[in-house]
Image (cartoon, rainbow, N blue to C red):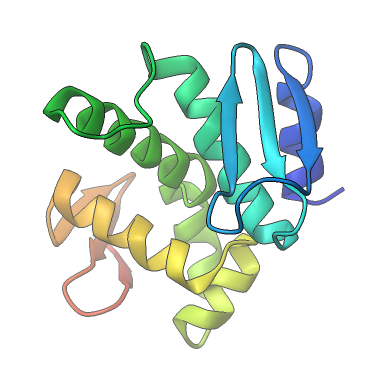
Length: 151
């Protein structure tokens, strides 16, 4: 069972998940009430990323934020994306898997996300925690790539 299957099993208890091939190509997922629509034409990694974000929207977003014309909608969108980054690229996994990767492409593969998603998650952590921070006895340096050392 990969990460997508695990997340589907976890979330399908609370939400109905539907794969659709009629969603616009740029749209990976969408919430309609308690149903999460996923674009079936996306890769499994992209479906995982989109499902994580749509679950975050279900749990944190209020109202219709599709328009993105006001600051509150943008804030809610950013919050849901941040929750998805933290779910799929959590610091525990980053610490555990980083030693097995020689570059960010391999690390993304180990985390079962796209390199683009990994880079956005790292940027999220830079904004949230700073370029250099400690976590569970580890010094994490995100200034230029990812360096993790014992603190």
